[in-house]
Length: 278
Image (cartoon, rainbow, N blue to C red; front, top):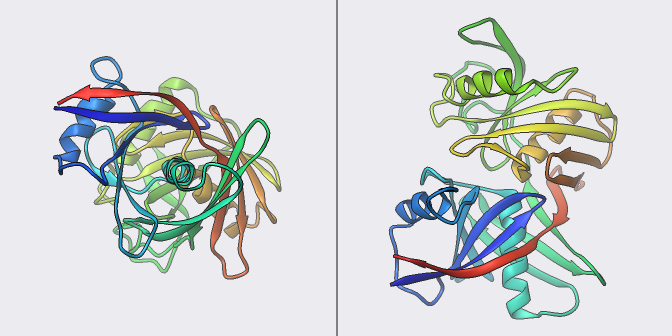
């Protein structure tokens, strides 16, 4: 049996997209582990499985390369474009995608040479219970996280998935980035692990990231992480209004609705399609 797929990317965050609305169920965590391996499979930052949902245009289930389920903002943009292109391939499209973090509204705007996808990312939460993070605090802002060598000051929050955010004067070199990021991801205070966003503030409306995603390692981009960085910067008084968040793969625009919900805009592109033997 072959598994048909489409490879997509959003500012370098790459995904294998499987439309499972008309196919038999699979053990998707195992499929994700095999398909996402970069040297022995197709290679991707995650597997996105599109399913049917009675109250939305489609459902997105996301799996990290290690098979763990998660929520992904860049993945949501890719799925939104995939579904919209098959429903109404010309002109703007508005649709709703169900996810493990709730049903999210999406808009696909097609220009002469590019496609921009805007997605509702929900309200960020600094409540340790929602992250989750095992600390007895009302919120996690500028928390000195004890490490094997020294500590790292972080702000932690959930933007549909767990993030620790560290504001630094300069982004870390490769050795420090990997060593510290791995330790933070698996820190005992994060029972479900966490991603770590290293953030350099360039201006009140611009941030630059180096990204470590739980279950994936270093990635070129992270939509939920960009939202977490922007939300933490705003909470700390370091950002105003909409924020451009840059990473190695490109830029996202993070804005806020009047009710405090985050709004993320960026590209979603096709790379190739094929089938994977299973």
